[in-house]
Image (cartoon, rainbow, N blue to C red; front, top):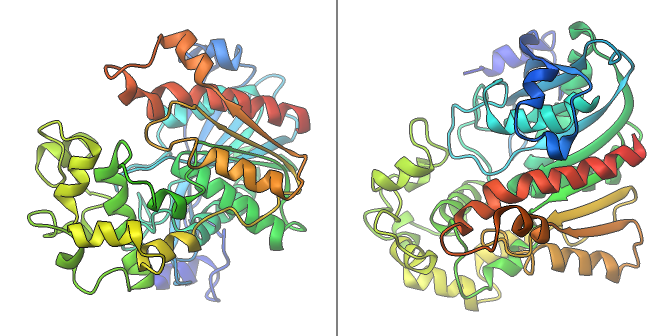
Length: 411
């Protein structure tokens, strides 16, 4: 835990400067080109051009209400022969994470490995935040799908990378690309919006590739059927927004049914449990093969979930509207990517609605990609037997390959 005094001390005793480094950046490992080529991604990434140095970061970033806080993360620096020129910087936001100790500053982490193979091994520097409430962050919870604090976590990771890179033997060329997957697609787009609104003189965003993100949160609240993974994502969102806005419910048992109401407000992210053990321990429904609708009905009071669906003034729905991303017009090249068969973040609810909002503004710099054909060509028809792999395993590499294709045009 990093105290407020430590944050102040890190910044010379004055108010903390966002993006300031709390700990000296430390090189954890160097992944060789051979290791990257053996990752299984070479067909999409191409052979590695660079070795990749993994550097841990711990930096100042504010909490959801502006409190003094911090987040950790990783900086990936291309290195080795032919990889010494200043690099463009990809700022990445990760997908939904339920494990509080997890950090991307880990050479064995699969998400970090994907970033290393797809981007850093191809000559991009990459910075990826762990977000508030994870790993070295002293924040007491994670403000899940809260657009403003997601944006500041990403923006301050860019500042932290700039503060760290030269001491680790790297250099940046000033161009920044933003990307993220799932929750990270929401976070990367929120950061893109915030930078172009007020920080464009500091951060030169040349492209954004936002992947399988839930951009239309309020629209998703009005869908009668629950999404795959509902028992993880929706209680996470409701309890986080209750901490931020304070008005989603008066008492936890007004929203959640027993036995789940007990402890639900401090359950996610968990210090000890993962997706599987959250269910097998009985903390969340699913051990008996519950459908998403059955999981919803086991978790939430019927009056709570039905009011979200039907009441235009429902406080959860209004909180969702505050975190929608339909209200802006990107100036730089922008791509949306997901698979049209995604059961977790349905493209028809999010990507298609987001693209239509951009089209309605007459924007010509936004493209939309559906990787479903690539998924089926690789894994065969999507069935009940394999659909659970769609969002988290099948789609991400194909969307990252599309993102890199965009970034290669502007780097």
